[in-house]
Length: 234
Image (cartoon, rainbow, N blue to C red; front, side):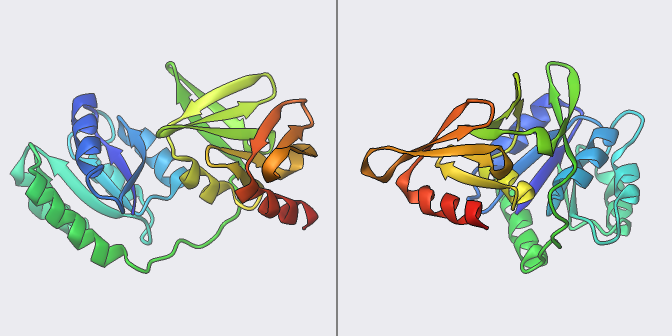
């Protein structure tokens, strides 16, 4: 399950993120601190589930829920107030969690979500035209066709552009799922844009070095070399 966390309190987001890491089939693909950012990320990342705070400035959780498409993600409202429960289920919420969220209660919510999102495949819409990356108080709009290669950094990915690198809070696997088929993994922690590849230079023991048109060299392990070559032939 791909999860988006929305809460205007950074500590609340961090706590829920830590708790969700206990579930190996749950991946937190993004965080938003307000309703406007939540709607942008929901459209861009297409999560399976949104854990959504109710009380937020300007655009609150119910406004976010009302703005999502009918076939959008499952909603779990997370709030310190129980008086919104009826309204939450009127908004077709999958669950309603009270802060502070207890581990046992979160586990029951995840089990319920597993049943509701199981087998619901998102339709393929192709590579997005651009990514929106928030970094150091700025929002960068990056054209996906400008990306040369991707480098994993724990739960982040370094997006390498000509003369610039930006950090996005995604796993490499999740980002490649959105960028496929224009990108291919060359290493456990790296992937390249097929259009940026200039040369594949053999190395010892079946490994290789991928030379990009910009001159950048990216490692390619033998486990991924054949897939890379097949994709280039296609």
